[in-house]
Structure formats: C-alpha cells, structure tokens
Length: 461
Ligand code: SF4
Image (cartoon, rainbow, N blue to C red; front, side, top):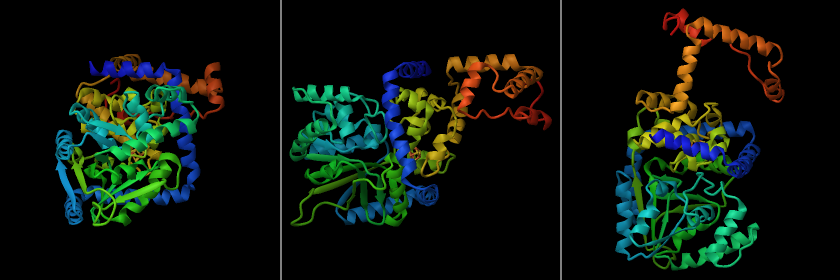
C-alpha cells in the first residue's frame, strides 16, 4: 500500500540523526536570516501587497497568458503551450533535436524537476548538466533536490567533497573555496561547449513578454546567454501582469528564502540577441499547465500564488525531521504536501497532507499568506473520504474513540488532565518539558460539548 511506503521512508528519515543535523543547520540559518532581514511592520506591508498582486495575477491567468504570448512573439520569442508534462518534455526534446543538441546546460528549475526533464533528455542521448551548485551536487549523487531553494541541504560537507573527488579523479578538500573552485572550473567549460541552455522562470511578465530569473550564482544568466538556443520551461502560474505587479513578490522572495534583501542576480530575458549583439539566436518559452488550470476557481486556488521561496519547509517541524526526500515528490514540506495531491492523482500523493503537525507555522511564515494548514486539513479530509489513511494513525484514533465513548469517559480524562496541569505540570517528565515552554490550559469547554449542546451531534458519538 502506498501509505506504507511513505511511512517507511519517513521512519527511515526520522531515524537518521546525521540527516536531522544537516537539515536543521541549514533551515535554521535561513529562518534566522529571514527574521532578521526585515522589521515585522515592513514585512507585513510587503506580504499584504505581494499577496494581493499574486492573487490578482492568478485570477487573471487566461488573459495574462494571451498577452504574454502576444508580447513575447513580438520580441521574437517562440512561445509553446503544453497541457501537461509529457507535452512539455516533447516540446523541449523537439527543439533540442532540431538544433542537433548534444550538450545541454541547465539552471535550477522546479518545473523541469516536476516533469523529470533531465531523465528524458538523457534517455534521448543528450548530456544535461545542472549548473546551480546545489543541483550539480545532487545530480552527481544521483538524487533529486531535497529543498526548493537549497537542493543539497541534507548533505554533509564530507559527502560533497567525496562526490567532487570522485568526479575530479583527485582529492578535493572539503573547505568551501576548494569545493566552489572545482565546481566553477568544471562548469565554466561546459557553458562554453553547450548547444542549448535550459532554465525555468520565477516570473513571466505579460506586458513585456519577458522571463524573470532570480539567482545567486550567476549560472542562470550563463545558461540563458552563452548557448545559441535558450529554452525556458515555466508553469503558467508564474504569470504577472507587469513589473509593478511583480515588485513586492520579488522583494519578499529572497528575504523569505535566505534572508537576503535581494539576490545576486535578477535576469530579465526579453528575446534573442539582435544584430551585432552577443547572446542566443533563439529563445523559446514553454508555458506549462500540467494541472494548474484545474486548481483555478476552486478552494485551493491561492496555492497557485506560491513563489517557491521554501520558507514553509524551513519552519515545518516535520520537514526538519525528515528532509525532503521522504515526501517522495519533487515538492516537499507544507507546500509539497498541499500542491502534490492537487497535481497528482497517485494515492501516495493524496497521503502527503498527513505529513504535518498542523501547527500553522507554515501559514504564519508564508510571504504571500497562503493558508497552508487549512488546505492541509481539507486535503486530509479529502484523502480520508477516498479511503487513504496511515494504518497506525487510523488504529490510534479508533482506540481513542473507543476509550472516550461515551462522552463521560472523555470528560473524566479531561478533568484528570486539568487537575494534573494545576499541580504544576503533572509528571516529572512533563514538568521538565514545560520548564521552557508554555503548555496552554485545557479548554473549559470542548468543541464536542458545544456541538452536543447545539444538537449537531449525539452524546456518545
Ligand atoms: S507556500 Fe509560501 S512559504 Fe511555502 S514555498 Fe510557497 S510562497 Fe514560500
């Protein structure tokens, strides 16, 4: 059963102490930097404006797509539309074949991960090299990224040095300058040799027909300018009306992701090189739907406003224990647990909303205010209605129901707990736990009492 495989991966990740340490180190660094970067008041203003602009764009996707195609074609960009991942991959393969591409360089893109583009290009005999440092590392390790913005955050420095040494055929020291020097030397040569560059896109600006890329390492602009042909594969939800509508999301994205006020590079692709200019001779944009339109107009629509900053992963107590691979999907953490079941019909995907403590921290931290924990609850209900559940959890709730039914038994347990808390935290272990934390008092009335009083449920059910 699919949920058992998911539970097995989670259990293995939870037992891996080295993984927790590596993940916690990175996500803490991101979270603390993000908190320090802006005052709460400024953050609130950016968040409100970015959310409003993103929702405006999401609700107007169809007409923005038409405008984008018109403007991009006016600038000699070839725009393709792909209904799903298979079509998107087919379009990229066709462009690569038309140009006889053998060597391809790629910048970081979750949309290309979503459709497993690298695997398909490799099957067609093409050599694809990831050029974002983190992506390059996970590619060498034969893995998928484990985080939206920090693909290799689960790996220790020793492991990375081992991978580089194997690749180099010589010992590469594990200090940062040695590691980055090796990657730079290896990747620079590839940029020069590549026939095709592939990127994603952080935003598609409809009024300009432009693709906007936000990167830190400069590899993105090398992928989009050095090869003769550039292909950007982008999810249709990345459309915005104009630069003004992008500004606040662009401001809040690096802050939420890594605590930077702006990334090192913001590249704007407005078409192929003109006469006498250096740059690609052809630029293609593949506008991919792949399930996005089905989310539009429904209860989960705001999820399309996501700017892929990864902040909800960093703060999530489940992600911190498991890392990204345990989710088994390209998108992990709270946004992955919401987005994946909406984009995929597989039963394991439907079970992902159960990977949450429902603490609501993801909703608090999201820079565009997506109500992630509410969507997680709704998607859990949907999964349960489809008969998808973790056997252990379902068993625990069945046992609790038996234990607490009829209602007077539940009230007895509640009374005992209230008494224990009044005695200063009850058992010694609980006292130790509450020393550094606040344990809220048990509510005077449980919601079940209110429902019984309203006659909405029966006593004992
Ligand atoms: S849901 Fe919000 S916090 Fe999570 S990746 Fe998207 S924008 Fe960032």
